[in-house]
Image (cartoon, rainbow, N blue to C red; front, side):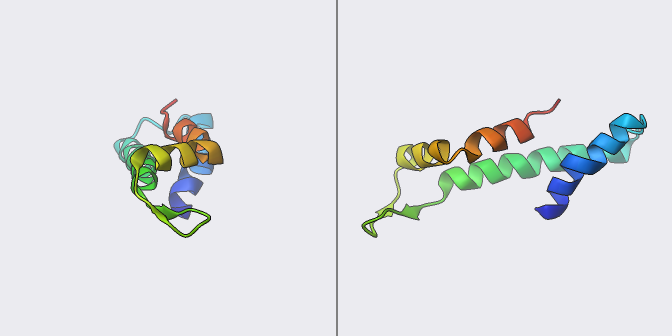
Length: 83
Protein backbone atom coordinates (compact mmCIF):
# COMPACT_ATOMS: atom_id res chain seq x y z
CA UNK A 1 0.00 0.00 0.00
CA UNK A 2 2.99 2.30 0.51
CA UNK A 3 3.81 2.20 -3.20
CA UNK A 4 0.19 3.01 -4.04
CA UNK A 5 0.29 6.01 -1.69
CA UNK A 6 3.60 7.12 -3.19
CA UNK A 7 2.10 6.91 -6.68
CA UNK A 8 -1.00 8.84 -5.65
CA UNK A 9 0.91 11.60 -3.87
CA UNK A 10 4.16 12.09 -5.75
CA UNK A 11 4.29 10.41 -9.14
CA UNK A 12 0.77 11.43 -10.12
CA UNK A 13 1.59 15.09 -9.38
CA UNK A 14 4.92 14.78 -11.25
CA UNK A 15 3.13 13.40 -14.31
CA UNK A 16 0.57 16.20 -14.20
CA UNK A 17 3.15 18.97 -13.84
CA UNK A 18 5.24 17.76 -16.76
CA UNK A 19 2.21 16.66 -18.83
CA UNK A 20 3.30 13.03 -18.99
CA UNK A 21 -0.12 11.57 -18.14
CA UNK A 22 -1.25 10.78 -21.69
CA UNK A 23 0.51 7.45 -22.06
CA UNK A 24 -1.39 4.19 -21.66
CA UNK A 25 0.80 2.85 -18.84
CA UNK A 26 0.13 5.93 -16.71
CA UNK A 27 -3.60 5.52 -17.18
CA UNK A 28 -3.36 1.83 -16.28
CA UNK A 29 -1.41 2.64 -13.12
CA UNK A 30 -3.98 5.28 -12.19
CA UNK A 31 -6.73 2.68 -12.52
CA UNK A 32 -4.75 0.28 -10.33
CA UNK A 33 -4.32 2.99 -7.69
CA UNK A 34 -8.03 3.81 -7.82
CA UNK A 35 -9.00 0.15 -7.44
CA UNK A 36 -6.52 -0.28 -4.56
CA UNK A 37 -8.03 2.62 -2.61
CA UNK A 38 -11.58 1.42 -3.35
CA UNK A 39 -10.71 -2.08 -2.13
CA UNK A 40 -9.16 -0.59 1.01
CA UNK A 41 -12.44 1.16 1.81
CA UNK A 42 -14.42 -2.01 1.08
CA UNK A 43 -12.20 -4.21 3.25
CA UNK A 44 -12.25 -1.69 6.09
CA UNK A 45 -16.05 -1.63 6.00
CA UNK A 46 -16.11 -5.44 6.26
CA UNK A 47 -13.51 -5.75 9.04
CA UNK A 48 -14.92 -6.81 12.39
CA UNK A 49 -13.57 -5.34 15.61
CA UNK A 50 -13.77 -5.85 19.35
CA UNK A 51 -15.40 -3.17 21.46
CA UNK A 52 -14.10 -2.03 24.86
CA UNK A 53 -15.81 -4.94 26.64
CA UNK A 54 -14.18 -7.47 24.28
CA UNK A 55 -17.32 -8.35 22.33
CA UNK A 56 -16.80 -8.96 18.60
CA UNK A 57 -18.79 -6.39 16.60
CA UNK A 58 -20.13 -7.81 13.32
CA UNK A 59 -22.82 -5.25 12.50
CA UNK A 60 -22.02 -3.38 9.30
CA UNK A 61 -23.82 -0.34 10.67
CA UNK A 62 -21.63 -0.24 13.78
CA UNK A 63 -18.48 -0.87 11.71
CA UNK A 64 -19.40 2.04 9.42
CA UNK A 65 -20.13 4.36 12.36
CA UNK A 66 -16.75 3.52 13.91
CA UNK A 67 -15.01 4.08 10.55
CA UNK A 68 -16.85 7.38 10.11
CA UNK A 69 -15.94 8.60 13.61
CA UNK A 70 -12.28 7.69 13.16
CA UNK A 71 -11.92 10.33 10.45
CA UNK A 72 -10.22 7.92 8.05
CA UNK A 73 -13.38 7.45 6.03
CA UNK A 74 -13.24 11.01 4.69
CA UNK A 75 -9.52 10.78 3.94
CA UNK A 76 -9.99 7.48 2.10
CA UNK A 77 -12.95 8.79 0.07
CA UNK A 78 -11.09 11.95 -0.95
CA UNK A 79 -8.00 9.94 -1.92
CA UNK A 80 -10.15 7.55 -3.98
CA UNK A 81 -12.08 10.27 -5.79
CA UNK A 82 -10.46 10.77 -9.22
CA UNK A 83 -9.57 14.39 -9.89
